[in-house]
Length: 46
Image (cartoon, rainbow, N blue to C red; front, side, top):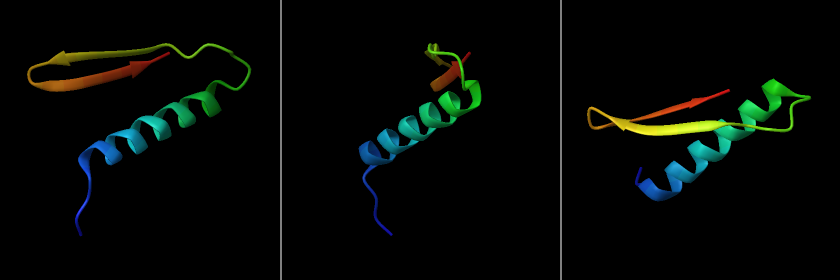
């Protein structure tokens, strides 16, 4: 199966944000931090 890496990244980010917003229900702000470390991309949110 062939895939397009950029499309997969978009889907992953969209799903991550969707899941985060569902988990915080009544909060209206989603804070996401993205940083590079040791040739990896770290994503955290609160």
